[in-house]
Figure 1 (cartoon, rainbow, N blue to C red):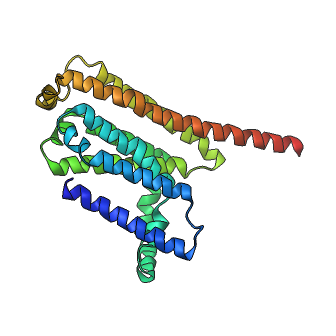
Figure 2 (figure 1 turned 120 degrees about the vertical axis):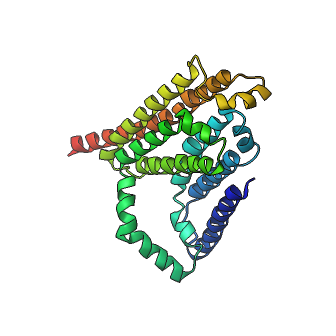
Figure 3 (figure 1 turned 90 degrees about the vertical axis):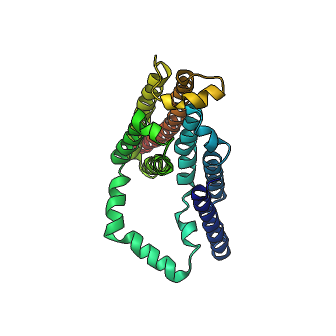
Length: 264
């Protein structure tokens, strides 16, 4: 695994482990087992997506590159958001440093941009723009020839997905759930459209993959079509399942409100 990928992952895992052990000693029930499990699963997904053999394969096959991105956006990101790792990571530091970090996070310099970036519509729009812009052939193929561009692509995919899922899962007031369902369904639509366009294309958008695809007995077009199916079917299905899950909670709460109103 490349050092630029391995070191951040090792640091993240070490900070979470240290924070969890320290916090569990102080308050054993402060962190739910389900949250720890979500973090472990999300972290493992990051390792699978960014490590060998998938990372090396993503430089040869467009399909592998798409699998890598979907693991980051629709598996790792929601799991990490559900884990709520912020407090645990904070406890990896000394009390003085926790106070400094807390003060910095509460400062207007951080709170202002954060409040904008995590508004559901803004997070939805940013996530959609990132997905569509990076699939412009000029930008996507640049990742094959420049490690910094490749890293920027991964960071923007994961970062925008974290903001998107945060806005969806943390805006869980009953009035906000309806719009969360809309944002998820519209994400299903636009990612499905992009995947279908790639799957039904008559010419390859990403010819730079031709040599790598040939090693696996594929043409650049066939490789692209398989990658389009990855985005169109399993990735879109994840957003759809999340939308249906939130809709179930929304309808259950609505029934409770109606029931309480009738009793009154």
